[in-house]
Image (cartoon, rainbow, N blue to C red; front, side, top):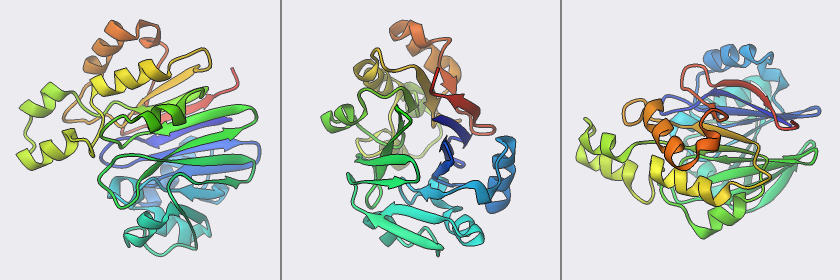
Length: 254
């Protein structure tokens, strides 16, 4: 199993997971042209994608789902609530499920995990193939015991470090948006993400990706400060998913 990112942040998200002959795209928040360009950096074309798994309907995760699906006949998997939002656009095939349910695409076993976020029926994913497991965990406003239990034992973890609370409070966002982002149904701040990492960090975890960082309310320096204080072993080992370039292939087998 290996993982790469097309980009991560409020301007668009897309994570690629491949194992054997199966290639999955989790979310597509970019235009068809931009998605195609970013896939090419990874040596892929849209036709190589076997399925699109959607976490929720917000535009930075779903804006390009329908056009990519229709243009290349790619099936889309989404919760009933996400599908009912009407924000995915017309899809070639739309497979609906309830958050918390699992399914299989090719050689990859997928478990959806319900999370607290301000969308119709949001979920995140844990994927397993070839004896390896990868957790995708972004876009949640609070950490629940259910979330902790669902992600223990992964070899790879893509984890949201969305904002620094001090930067968010002092920033230019209007008060309502600050409350939304920093609320229990919004996004994880650096402290929450660090606490969650502490709960999940164990012998199995080999690869950590810092993801969904706000360009306005966070900085690599702020995240590094938290890692240095609380997770020094990850300070130089962690991978970074940036908005503009994402990150290249990370094999989970090593």
